[in-house]
Amino acid sequence: MKIDIKCFKAYDIRGKVPLELNQDVAYRVGRAYVEYLQAKTVVVGHDIRLTSEELSNALIKGITEAGADVIHIGECGTEEVYFATFHLNTDGGICVTASHNPMDYNGMKLVKQGSRPISGDDGLAEIKAIAEAGVFKPNSAAGTMRKQDIRGDYIQHLLSYIDVSQLKPLKIVCNAGNGGAGAVIDALEPHLPFEFIKVHHQPDGSFPNGIPNPLLPERRQASIDAVKEHQADLGIAWDGDFDRCFFFDETGAFIEGYYLVGLLAQAFLKKSPGEKIVHDPRLTWNTIDQVGSAGGEVVQSKTGHAFIKARMREVDAVYGGEMSAHHYFRRFAYCDNGNIPWLLVAELMSVQGLSLSTMVADRVAKFPCSGEINRTVNNPDKILNSVKEHYLPAVKEIEEVDGLSLAFDQWRCNVRMSSTEPVLRLNVEARADVTLMEEKTQEVLTLVSQFDDV
Image (cartoon, rainbow, N blue to C red; front, side, top):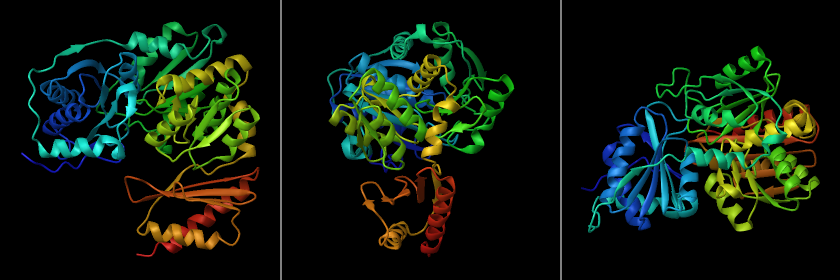
């Protein structure tokens, strides 16, 4: 029977359960996924949400009835599905997860062979059409499902990015937010000299301490308090499916993801000089400066994991980073990972004998930034055109690859719309002038308000 499925988004599947995403939809996605990819073997895993296991079971039923075999890796993070897909050389993988969405949501992230993303312009629309139609091709025999524990192999892969012998006995606050990251920390712990202070560590799909999304200031306080209370060297927090990690220095201060991109780029370039580093266009000057000084080559990409991954493959970049705390690695099939970044930072702190605050202080001073500011708006096209016209007489560089980027001698900004909601996103940075950055941020926000007439 044909139905209208509303949970397919630009990059993945997300929707309210059971109104938009339910066991019938999950089954249809499984059938359609196999039919579209002609897959023979598929990795399936799921996050800790209360509805994830039942949706995962329905998805597996659809995949196996379409004739493909399933390797079920159980409760995990999205990055573990990515790992299993390329490590086991399967035809694809699906993680049932809604990441940091509200409790009544769930979703799926889909990849094909080699953990290449399936997104709106690369297969997702076709899978949606097949799933909606509900008329599936017959097959001669059903596939099988077997469970496999890949975490041990995954832990060894994570450890391969660092030299454990160089690590110092750091005290690290780790806040899983009652998501899935705690299980990976527990598995890493015996291999590392660190003392872990575990906050909201146990997985709990009811999210008793709020949905884990440290990009929101109101979700940071528990990590800040723990760093201060335990006088920790470093704080780390994750979102629910832990493909993003967030950093706090030894004072409890939140470190903008932008500065981590430059820091991690330099870490890779020290080991592999001359490599390419991919970055997004929202904030750029610090990354360009750090990569250049380390002898690397910067390559810009549109914002979003599908674009970053494609650009990294195109230029064979060793690392890619977004200011939103997504970090991508060539040896991780160009996918994003929420554990490799903090391991690399801890290694840098150990080898250099420096605190995180010291390592980023000069970068923050040299290129102060606003962080991403979001505003719900009514007339995005009018706003972007009006902001462009307002600054046109004085602008030095203008780009419209991803929203509107305007660069001047001493400051630059990027104004873009969210791909999933009526929200305008603003980022501003300046050259060694916090006051100018703050003034220009307010100036652009005022213009946005003026131009957003109903």
